[in-house]
Length: 249
Ligand SMILES: [Cu+2]
Image 1 (cartoon, rainbow, N blue to C red):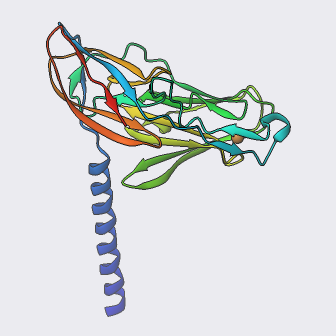
Image 2 (image 1 turned 180 degrees about the vertical axis):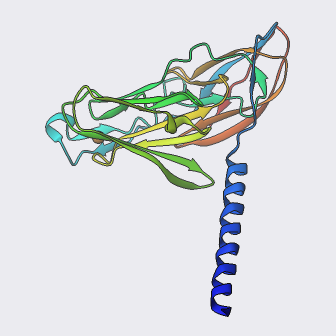
Image 3 (image 1 turned 90 degrees about the horizontal axis):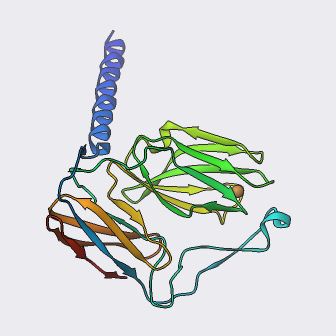
């Protein structure tokens, strides 16, 4: 009798603990809400992200060499002659209100020439991420959520045949940074910033960016780069005004 009661009590405590942990994880996973609507007389934030010149890394290819070659560029440091840094993400993290997304198309990442294309992207929270194999070799798209210093599994999609495209709504269901890897080819890497608002861009080869239709106000502008880390600067946007913010890593 005592043992039975004890087991039942233990079970109740465990159930309560599981429920508590679940609630806590749900709460911490919640992103601040974002309200989309027309922006009248918004301003813009423009600028250039720069870094000291650094050679890109060359990665050794150890599989499917006939198609993938013997080496692949890491695409980590793509820095122009004037220091313009490509593939940095510039974003207004935590903005609560502003314009809607210009496009609600589903984003696509291609496996092409044994690389993910694009190497870095921003995506709308709640969109359906699609992955496609444009190569005559088998790839797989393994998504991980990068949060609190941990890399946690999201989903792994096999793409055994050329021309195959798969989409899953689960991938972009939560805002944050995703790492995309191919288990078959350990050099393949892509990064996706999932955001609930459209105020985020990836810098082009000159390192420039332009965030438009920003409601007047003060913001934290965050710049992220896969190898150089993250920087945050304060920016004040005036109604109808263009603000210039240059950041150097
Ligand atoms: Cu692959």
